[in-house]
Image 1 (cartoon, rainbow, N blue to C red):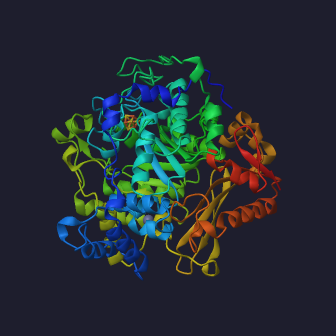
Image 2 (cartoon, protein in one colour):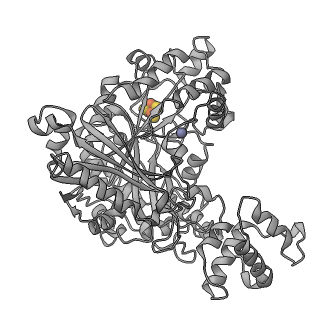
Image 3 (tube, rainbow, N blue to C red):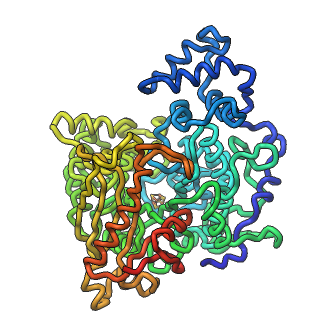
Length: 621
Ligand code: SF4
Ligand SMILES: [Zn+2]
């Protein structure tokens, strides 16, 4: 594992760096609520919540209208949800009533946020420029390239001074305040091109995120309860990543990383990773975003050292002419190479694709989208469709002003997205169809943030449905084991046969799935020069092995050990999927099955017979 002698500092350092007054003043709204002062009304509310035979988003409001703060159900005296969650936690902790997760879930705000079983925590890297020169990409002061200051996630990151530790703590405390379990966390590190930051910065950044996960929940008296703390730009000395290829906006260049570490607080990345295996918030997935031309065998090894499990790749177009017109700085061959390297190393592949780029037409976009599935070198696991928007200050904005670019109409775009979605294979998840840019920032072009719904409505008119993973997830609904069947979608890629194994209900709803990658036989036998062989040469421990790239079982994010009868995570689906993958890999002639495990899932795989290697885990077959 990584020997990063000058990486992370301890959380105490960051805590000291906070403005003490800001720290003392900040508390999540409702957290200082005292349930004992309203105990009778609250117990009546909880009893009604528990007794309700069915539950929908209006059920809580109906109950609250009957049970107000003053005991008379008056409208001005509503309890807010955060007070209810806090009160429930206080009263159950005091033994006044028994804890029942089902009741807490009914009280939770925005239950959809963790309904895929994992709490997502998004953090942004420090503004440091980007080696790219894409003509549509905004470059706002004080923001990582491509992010705008009024995007909600970017604003939160800026409030934390882009400090990774503070960003993670803030999100964890928000989950906590909303009553969500956040014991399984997917970390998404966004902002510009990850691979272009100095390695020291990247290692420090990940270590600090893990430090935050390794701490117990909100310790508002002594700990850095960072939420909403303004000006948390710490004096920790970690002021910039320093883009390796280009002099960054903040003046730091390659490896120019002003790290000072007090010896007593020196923690290595491998140590903080090891701690996370039993931490209160386990990292079950780590995602970064980068450019295709920055993916090399060496970079792939470094990603694994950091614990990365999924890579978001900005592809945007599969047409060399369009890529050149938009000054992407790489060609389609670079995309195919990057995808080949990442898939051979077991990463989940999340591609970004942009319709309406400069030089494209709705018809050329339809042909472009079809290449994603027709080309065996591509075939991604996940996809974001980001229609190009015109943002002031970009090169594209100038071209548009000069009359050289036309944004599609709403009608054209809805038609296009509907056509694209109708072709998504069942092994792919469409995560977004619109980038969450505030409408005020979009000078021209489509501003409909409900593009997905509009496209679905258009598809419904035509009798079509989207078969992607997202549209078929059970999403926390109760599922019975007896109603589930194993469905297998197999497809070829340039270097492997992929088997997408899923347990589905009779209606085709997904309760869980596994991605099994079987490297092509000729690659195994002749070790010909291919992306797979380059990866195997760089990472001998996976040479010749079949690979589990992903296991995902749905259900709300449950605290470890919590019961929730009927939810997919407790049907042993993960175990069954892995047993199936072992049988299939063995039947295909492989004698070893590797898995790209996240730090927080290593112990799970150990229990299933996988042994630790340096960067992967593997089981003999
Ligand atoms: S590579 Fe990404 S962040 Fe960099 S300029 Fe291009 S679109 Fe923007
Ligand atoms: Zn879909």
